[in-house]
Amino acid sequence: MKQDLEIKICGLSTNESIDAVIADGASHMGLIFFEKSPRHVSLEQAQSLSEHAGERISKVAVTVNAQDDYLDNIVSVTKPDMLQLHGHESADRIQELKLRFGLPVMKAFAISEVSDFEKVKPYIGIADRFLFDAKPPEGSDLPGGNGVAFDWEIMDALPKDVPYMLSGGLDASNICEALKRSGAKAVDVSSGVERAVGVKDIKLIEEFLAACHDCDAAKHG
Image 1 (cartoon, rainbow, N blue to C red):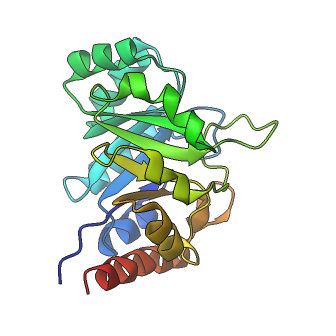
Image 2 (spheres, one colour):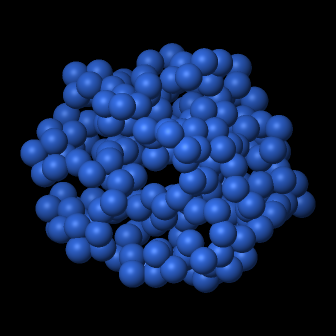
């Protein structure tokens, strides 16, 4: 049966979690390079994790307003398939990085209402994909991974040909509803598969991916 849902598990930091993500059918894994994040990995860790994953899954390097020298090191040691920018990077900055590295770029935006899509418009046709997450709680230092959801139905206001991943507060219990209400064809999860902040739980990973596959299979009849 055809299944076309793309699933990214982000914030991985152990070989065990990578093996589980791959075994249970995720399409992408995310490595986070942001020191304020509890999911941050060093360049040395990232190299080891990337080598362990090999070519078995698409690797995404997640950064926040990173400078060129840091990005050079990240790309050199992890050989990612995509860059994810979670800061205040401009459309011009995305074009610069696409030229510099020859890699597709996913730009993350925090949204809560239809009017938030206005800030996305200058990036359409420049970013290869978008990631839409909920706005961080007040006082949070993290642009993502806060376990907060938003009204998935506002995705109806986005042009249908704009590629994106849905993120924010997803877990095994609500993924089917999120997919139905948003119409998303790709999803991203981090805190929803953790037993503690920054600590992935293999059972929760398995449950989330199984729920994703079941929802997708049901959609295809």
